[in-house]
Image 1 (spheres, rainbow, N blue to C red):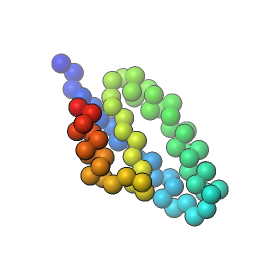
Image 2: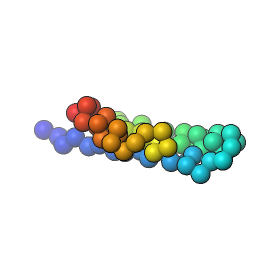
Image 3: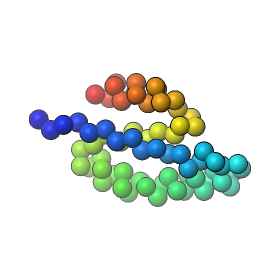
Image 4: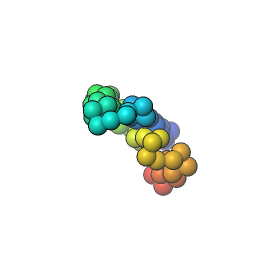
Amino acid sequence: MLPQIFVVHIMGHDLGANNAYETASAILLDMKTLPMIKVIRRAGAFVYPWNPKTMSFPKLMVAGIRRR
């Protein structure tokens, strides 16, 4: 049996965003990582996107437990 691998993709580029333009730039930076995330998922890992600005760490952990 293969081990389950969980990867947390921290999407924190918008933590320092002060206006709509900076927020849009942060979204584009996050989108730049999508091809790498797809490769990791195809390899069998679970990838959890996490933005600390919008989701608390305990909620992230609960989401990971439910996924198992």
